[in-house]
Length: 370
Ligand SMILES: [Zn+2]
Ligand SMILES: [Zn+2]
Image 1 (spheres, rainbow, N blue to C red):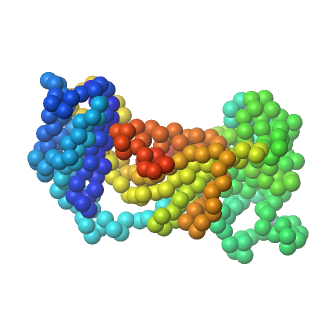
Image 2 (spheres, rainbow, N blue to C red):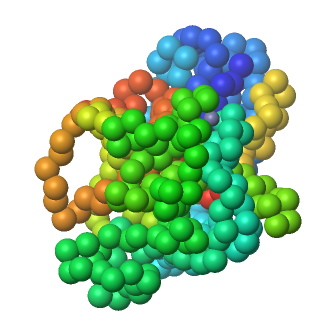
């Protein structure tokens, strides 16, 4: 009977907003909502579902703004202040940046790498794309907003003009949060270059792009590394994890910021613009495996509520609150799918704001890739 149940908790206002998606249309007269301290009871015709809540307590009979439209039930309820969700005072001091986690993730990303001999393979068809590579150095590249004067340099003679290009030697792998930069001469004919895009010649998946004249930037979610020294394979990363990393690396926490994930392919560009509205929103949602039972224990999920928009070939004027981040198309696709699924938690009228969609990003949803 229930497709999804979403409670948006607003502890500072001491209210929660409920959006219940049913699998059939109902009439207001057939619906009964009863609020108790620890559960919400929904009766439709003669069937009752009880939603149990562990982390919040409702004020009984505080129901307001009940709206039953088509297959949606929406309402508002008052909640008691709860130390677990933070009182008015602690709510404000929650950590706005995720840098410590981010660092751990980057380390996790790279620790499987060994210096030594390896092959690079297409993750989609396992085509071997490189000759035997002998890696001596594995170095992080600074993030997009780095100060060139604070960065180390490699062993080249740099003229002042290409000072800021990061050029790997044949024995180097440079890595960022979701890409690698590798010398172009290390690859064989299984890797094709078309305009500025790097493609697997067998399965035609896009793997990366030309970085400089003699280096490629490959997306971590597109290539596997096969270590020949100890015959282990480091698999390509999960595109959705890379989406979360892209958000975490780009976010500034500044009010009004926009994160723009971009992908370029020849003359075409794809962009996913994300405007965070609420960095720390707690939800209570249905568990993964429901919903035939009539007693459902709601799970807590910590999300970022965002406005988002997917566009192609759009040039947007630059501004101080915009952060651009170039990613693989797979990363944009994975992120967009996550967002579109989240948008389905709202009834139609709440799904858009001007020309943006409304959605959630579950930042904690980090899959361990190892
Ligand atoms: Zn250099
Ligand atoms: Zn392939």
